[in-house]
Length: 277
Image (cartoon, rainbow, N blue to C red):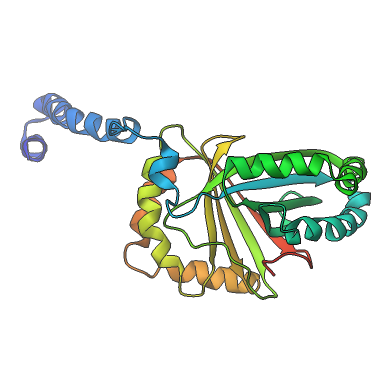
């Protein structure tokens, strides 16, 4: 209010007084501007007395997820897919292994000649250790890993937990394309992300496109992965555009974008053996 008064006075003042009044007006605005700028960069973090994993993950399950990214030599992709489709279902179907193949894909758009595998370990870290120990004794799997290694340029993996408010990733019929949207968050913002997306996910259920949401525990930290299914690229476009017409979606996007350091989108095609078709 004071600034508006000073500006109005400045317009009516004699020419020699106008610069001084303009200076007063700008100085009266400065604390408010400083406060606004500080709100962009200074984040209030509530004190926490528990780990992010306990606050954000599903309590009713103790499942651990592993996501694998394999960058395959371009000339080897067909052979890579062939041996994966021969060996991975045996692990998935073997009752003595407490793990499930959730989905397996090739990247269509994004990083090329890349394979992505998502596994679930029922029972958490003990189940992961049990599977790894048994596979070391599995001669067929040892031979498969050696053959597969000759086809790869690089590989990486992450251990993930599932957001409590996201859909359970269950097998679904196809054909579908899948989008894996990966977000590198700013350290210290995972709780905020979870709070906003607990509300945002309800805007993205109309076409049953939400498959699963995960956050990293080991590997690249403060990583979030959202997995979506669509009939085709046009369906993806239509579904995403429809969200912007729902009251509240725009506000949630506005508040989550500043939490992101980097983001990536992959469009993926499932292999024949993938439970997510």
